[in-house]
Amino acid sequence: MNVENTKAQMRKGVLEYCILSVLSQEELYPPDIIAKLKDAKLIVVEGTLYPLLTRLKDAGFLTYRWEESRSGPPRKYYKLTPVGQKFLNELDETWDDLAQAVKKMTRRNAR
Image 1: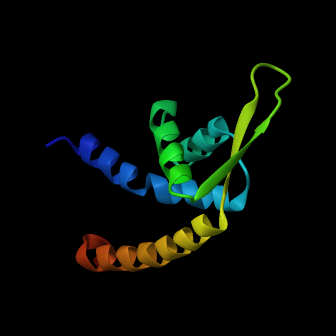
Image 2: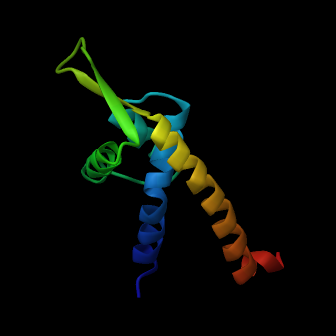
């Protein structure tokens, strides 16, 4: 088993949660979302982000607006919907419970 594959799967498992969280703070253009995820060491590429944004939009958690760009085509800016905020609140609770459970079950508890 390759540890890098496992680490990548762990990151993928929390990507939607992180995307919703970052969009709850401000409206963003996808390259800005990617930059924030990379800064947090949640490495992601456009080919991963765009399908997630589409799925979250189709589920009613995100909306977007177009903005004209001075250099190139119009830009799509995403933001959380009220339904998305409610879903994020539920994920926050689940994350807290999950983090506590994992801490209990791993060596992190012994530190």
